[in-house]
Length: 112
Image (cartoon, rainbow, N blue to C red; front, side):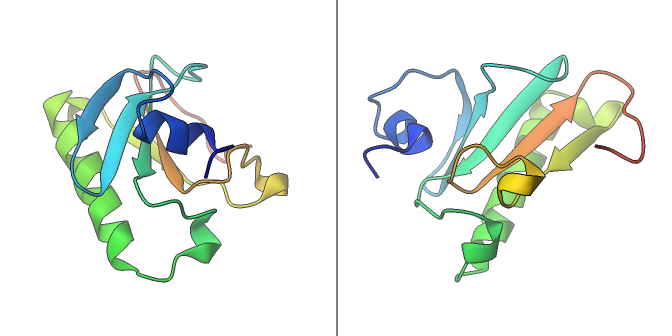
């Protein structure tokens, strides 16, 4: 989709710091981090949101990429948080399926 910032990054039309990529996903550094480590795992296929997933294999592919990067960056040593926002009230600001990977500080519960 021409107006989707994540699609433009995937197509190479917008710059991003890519820390992992494979045939199905890319993981980039967030431009406006909310934690010392804030990454975004993004599907290469344009899927508007979590509730629009039709092929559930994509979740396994996203989590595989998350696990690989968490180990590579040693985020698994202290822990990390995964966040998926779905819809405007949940603060989904980009209509393209992505998972936030947050680490590097103590998080509170409940979030929000």
